[in-house]
Length: 175
Image (cartoon, rainbow, N blue to C red; front, side):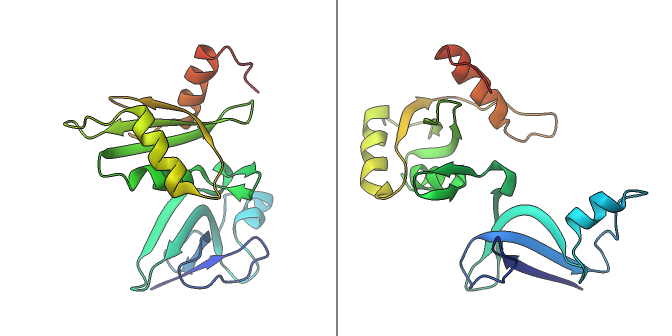
């Protein structure tokens, strides 16, 4: 009893398979913020669609995949880009279990990679994989292999903690 659609920045429904913002409407969605009409108007449009702030797409079977938060997009030389696009390139490698890409204040992209436990993969091999697969995507300047990622209390990866650690290690001023 819910409707869902994916829209672009102009509010138009995007073609199947394209990434955009996930919007939902129906009896299970909230009707607004308590005593906060401004916040309500920012999240729910005039036709009742709740703008989730999530970037998502529907596949050919109408399965919805949420990729990340719209607010996490960054400007790059190819336009607005979510780090999950770069992460997906790393995840294509059979020896990569998880990948997180962040952008540092100096505009460089950094990848933290959790390889499969039995992997003999090196950062140099993975960098070559990225270059061959990424074609028109921005360069990832630094690849670090990790055993785990910083998590918040609900188990979500904290991109901000990765940025903080990299800024400290590279002696970068944080925004």
